[in-house]
Length: 70
View 1 (cartoon, rainbow, N blue to C red):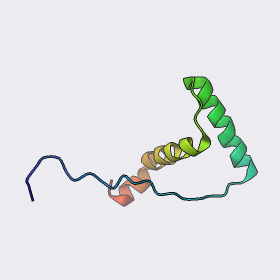
View 2 (view 1 turned 45 degrees about the vertical axis):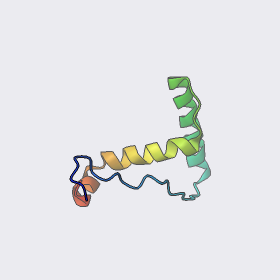
View 3 (view 1 turned 90 degrees about the vertical axis):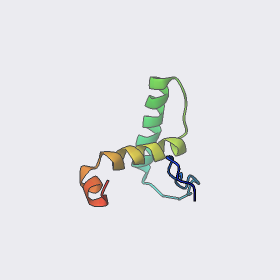
């Protein structure tokens, strides 16, 4: 194995999951997507926003970060 500075890249193949949400959460996500479009001038489907929202939530959870060793 070559001794190079760049570490091996992580797996970047998306993993598809399916979730069900209550109607009020669906409405909130729809409203958020509309506000996103208004703020950035670009429509994004909820399915594209949810992974970013989950990542932001996980990254901001300090207790999880400490426990996960991040």
